Image 1 (cartoon, one colour):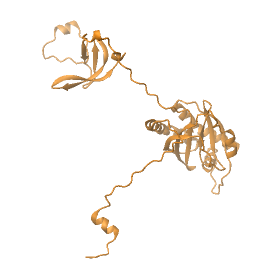
Image 2: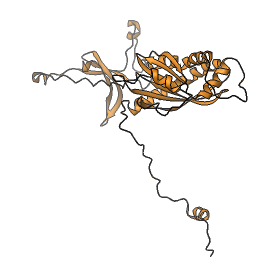
Image 3: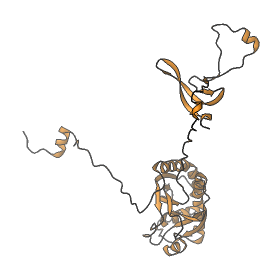
Length: 299
């Protein structure tokens, strides 16, 4: 029997190591508080993803050709220390939502390439990184308006652009994160593929508040002297108007269409008034109803 057996041969004979791999644990920094639930972040990400095709259509006009957008991240961030490690040159568009600042950040090289294409020029092979000219800054501000317009409409926010910044010093001069300012931001990362190359646009949006879930209404307590009062509760599938002559000719075995789909819910009535809806079911061999929604009973 050969003694020199490789690890690959052993794995082929006995299969891969069945021991479970270590679980991945996400580290959370509690110095950066979160106020949006995971489900709300997921819902926001899904809604933004569904709006990307419309943004692609508008953006393709600026970039003079087909472009592709895809979500690469969504979550919460705090404005404190967000830009501490930035070095020149930078490319940041600042906007405001009810006085609170938000930002769109992308790399300068991609911004420069996009501005050249937007001007109708060809990107030179020997292009070197440089600051955008005032005209190019204006073009990129307008082009990024595609995102601010769509995101503002989608999220119910009014985004007003203020400055396009290319140096850390200029940015920190107008950056407002002082006392009394809401520091929480929703961050959204969107990957862009176009003739200008590949880049990631990073959005930091203020004004996104946590969902408020209304507490269910509490049923009023009845006075004790009403404990023995009975009411009529009925379930109504449908009704149909029949002329008097037709009614006089009805016989056993006649089919009367009710004009409702099979499996439709039924109206639940209390003393003739609609109090909710239900589905047909069975319980202990008897026909029953399964309540779907209650309305007037909770008022």
